[in-house]
Image 1: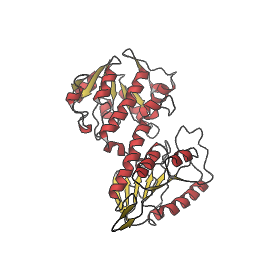
Image 2: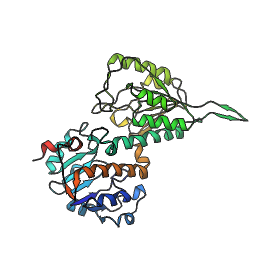
Image 3: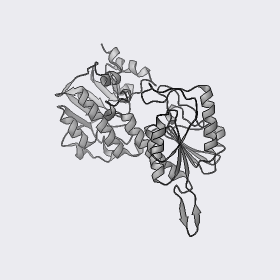
Length: 361
């Protein structure tokens, strides 16, 4: 069975780094890697020669039984693959339902790693958490790069500088990493999340937890944010506006799966922020938590820099690729036994990820 790694079209990461590729080969598969697939992440073709065959894209598509890539394939690419090929990527079928028909039309089967259930058992395969952790870290560094002020308190002969105040909205994986990173840099950090379970985690990192009463119960949300009532959102916005007027940096991470990102920072809030302040919006690709966010752009509004970037993990391609690769390896261990594919739909992990199973004839 040929398992292939395709080059990313517009992302510096690679789905399998060489050290992990060797472990994948040990599962009993023949490994194919597209030429220069790892180059942008710092891995040359020579790094793969001990465990894989290097091919151009046409040959890769013709020979592969399973193809892995981080970003989804286009319909043109899908139509070049072998019949019944397994394609593993992040298709986001909850946002793009049309992808299921596109895969069926091309005669290939789709597995979406962002559909793996976020359970303890599947933690080692959770690509969303791996990439969110990197994004939270990088968000703080990007904020510090654009902020015209120090993060830590500085006491010098020329005078004293107060520490930066960072407000983190959403204390999931990305938010918690942002909190920890900002604290390491010496900032004063406040955080808000609708999930009360996040309170202790926020406090354990040395940040202040902002409480807004009346949040909808998220006990059965599987780690995702849930849609909140209009009344709660109004109270939340009022509290955020109050905190934002004093913050130097706001980092927003709130997303509701399959829906537009909740609006947390309206235009009027941005206009009350101090000159030179920075907003980093990690929900930019789903509409943004800030009303003024433009996806994949850095803009300035009344002296406030707004960074819209949902793929900050792509700015750290070496380690992002390593973590992603380990997630992929752990998933492949579930679906490949002794070199043979075993898509056991009784397994909740396989059932969750194999989103085209019901359309396969």
